Length: 514
Image (cartoon, rainbow, N blue to C red; front, top):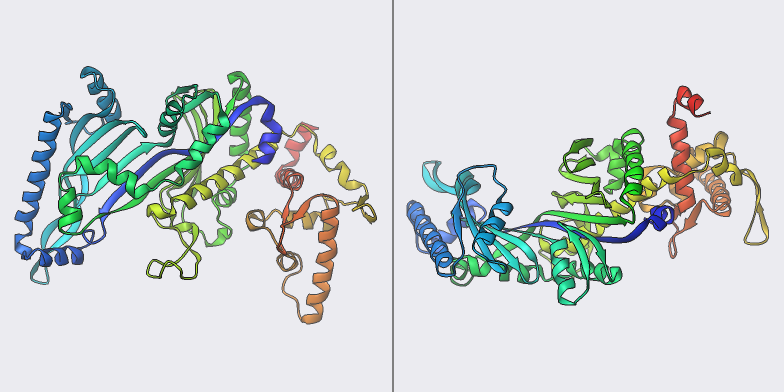
C-alpha cells in the first residue's frame, strides 16, 4: 500500500482497514454427523425409532418459548411468507412502528432450507441421517449497545444450528460514540472522524476479540435450548466464521477526483490484470497447482460499478463506496487454501507449531484478517502504477547510467528492455517472487535451469550474486533483514510492472501512443 499512498496521499483524507460484514455459524461438533447423533441418543437412553418424537418435542419447546418471550418482552414477531424479502429493512420498519431503539428490536420467522436430521433406513436399520430439508427459522434482530445492528438466525429443527451476522463498521460506530469521538457516517462507510488513528486502533482491537464469549452472550438469551444443549447434554456450540469481509477504505477529499481515478483503475483491472494476478493477490504462490475457477467480473449496478476478482468462492473487489471512498475488499468463504502457523488440534498447547491449512473456526480469524489485508495491499500496489505520469523512457532513463554504490563501488548501466538484463528483470516478476521474495538459488534455477554438475552450480551461483549486487546498486531490490532472501523495492515493482505492460502491448497501440 506504500506506493498507493505515496501517489494519492494528498487526495485522501484518511484510510481505514477492518472487518466489514461477518457471518458466524455455531453448531455442535457431536451433533453434526450421524454417528454423533447416535451417541447422543445412547447417552439419553433413547432408541433410534424414538428420534423423531424426541426432536419434535425439542422443536415445540423452542418455538413456544421463543414466541412467548417475544410477547412478554414486547418485541414484534412477524412471519414472512415471501422468499425474497429484505429482512433487515423489515426488522427496522417493525422497530420504528413499535418505537424500539435498543436491545432486541424484532423477530422474523421464515421457512428456509437447512441441513436437518431425518430417520432413514440404512442396511435395514433406522438411522438418523443428515440431509437437505426445510424448517422454520427465527431471525432475532438487535440494536446492540456494543455491536450495533446485528442478528441471530436460529434453526428450529435438530441440530438447532445458529448463525450470527454483524458488521465491523457498525461496531466501530458504537465504540466511537462511547468515547465521545465525533464522526459522520453513511451506512457502513465512515465519511469523517475527528481521530482517524483512534478509529483504526479500535478496528484493530476487534481482531483480538474473545469471539466464543461474545457470540455466546449474544445467542444465549434467545436460544431456549441453550441450557439443555450446553449444561445437560454437553453439546456446546462450536463457532466458525462462515464468511468474512475485510475492507480498506480510502476516503477522498473530493468525489470528483475519486470518480476520475476510479475510471482509470477499472480500465487497468480489465485491460491489464489477468487470472495469474488474481491468484497472486490471494496468496497463491504456485498458480499451476490452482485447479479452481478464476475469473474477473465487472458489473454496473444502481449504486455504482464494481470490479471483482474471483478464485473459487473467495474474492477481491474494488468499488467507489457512496462516491466518497475507494474501497478494496477481500471476502473469504473457504479459508482452507490459506495457511496459519499453529499446532495441530490434537496436540498439546505447548507442542511444536507449523504452517497448516486455515480452519473455519474463530481461532483463526486473526490470521484471516492478516491474509485479507495483505491481499488488499497487493492490489493497491498494482493500482498505484496507474498513477505513473512519466513515460517509460523517463522511468528507465536512470537505469541507463552507471551508479556509485555505497560510496565506493561503481555499478554498470542496465539495459532493461533487451538482452540479459531484460530477461533478468522479467524473471523477477514471477508471482511467487513478488509474494515471498527470492534467494540466489531461486533466481539461478529460473535463469539457467538445473546445472549439470557442482562446478556449473558454483559458476551460476557466482554469476547470480553479481547480478543481485547490480540490482541492489540500482535500487531495484532490497535484502530482507535477517534472511538470505531479496524482494523487489517499490521502484523496482513499478519498473517491472511497466516493462511487462509494454511487452504485452501490440504495435498498433504503441504507434497510437507515439
